[in-house]
Image 1: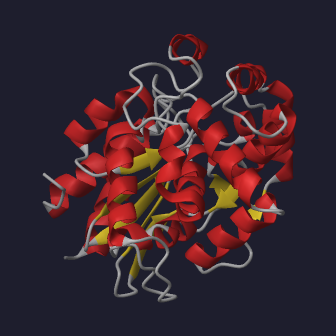
Image 2: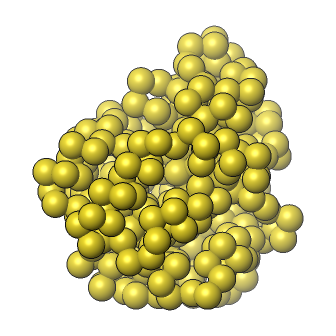
Length: 304
């Protein structure tokens, strides 16, 4: 498959879409990112990299980081995680308070904000240096020791994240946070502030392509079954309340973030990450979703 040719074709045709979305202005630091940026990278398990545009430019991973924290939590506590968080699509906004109240403090899935807060709480409860452990884990997966937290983004998100604070305290009121709510919030915004490029993200997610094993380190990151579980959650819960549309158009398990990134994986074939900061109404990269739709159409490769 000539992935490089396909990426270059997408790059040449995507420009009209770059001005259509809106950046995530509710996090002031993200509002400063130029909307017209675009990068895309594909990694294959045999070590090949294909990239175009701003694929080496770092951006705020935001909710893409939830793939890595979920993976780490599953490594730490296994099936016990599902005693505290569900595995169903939310069908509502990713920061809904109403749903969490209605379901008595059990988040619908680990990729909405309430679920990710519980995942963060699990990691904090198991590791003495949770922030350092998450960062080391992601660096190892990405094969890049320079991956870092963007502390300006973390401070910006923490200062304006009143709804996340409300979710954390609501979780605490139902007994589903074991650590101090503010400590969980601090760790959560650090994880979301991970600064990574499309190249970093696509390489970091190769373990999901390769049956749970990182092809560039040889590490069995999670079991084959756990890798399957993570991918199933990406497909059904990974793109906020637009999972049906994303599955219809792209046909791959994916995880988006309001920093404009989307990562998607095809088992046995590739991991692909696209970044374009302009978001659609659901909080997913508008141009990124279009680029991924074109990519699976041109390659003819999807899980369907």
